[in-house]
Picture (cartoon, one colour):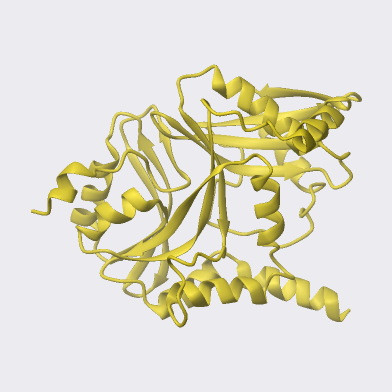
Length: 308
């Protein structure tokens, strides 16, 4: 057996695979085509080691599986189990022992934002769940087709929700957090009200960071930015190159550079993110994958808007 298989067991789960207190393994399997399924979301017992989850999938899957949101450690582990991979983007990771708010320009934005209200955590209940759904309608992209199957898009048990409450009592922004592993938190949702004042989201991130820093975690992921170019993983005429090219072509519909610029304000550690599949990622898989995340509807909506 490859020694890397033994020594490099992953310590984290793929993005949007979250921890819960139960002892069950709950997967959301999205059919890609007849012989392939995408394990898009999952709730994993906090008592189960990540490598045991992958071993379970390998033993019980009747179709070949796609797993998105894998870091380099997971990719390496799955490679030893016969999985292929392609680079699809980067993940912005904040570390609680680092100062991510040192930039003068960022501090000024946070100061401006805090003039308008405060950060608070919501209790999970039906009332707050419904209020978040209503808030989405007034968020910056609330009137557009929403991406699907990539993250937990509703306030659900086993996630946490922080909001920026304005001085008038109304919400101006929201961040949904999940537990990815024993030392890592992950961002599921970033929501900003359309007419929110400048600095609201920066102040929200800063406030959430301060609260989470008090807990027993080492890092907090602000989430993935897809389509980012990587010289290491995207030489010409590879799958990764065409993913980046696709991103540039549809930037009018999905502004990944704007998302990158926002997250990069906090000087994160940028980790590579991969899509893995056994035995390999096929180009047909990627085509079906795009339809399953609802990206085609977002593109069509933007094109129609431009034409009209």
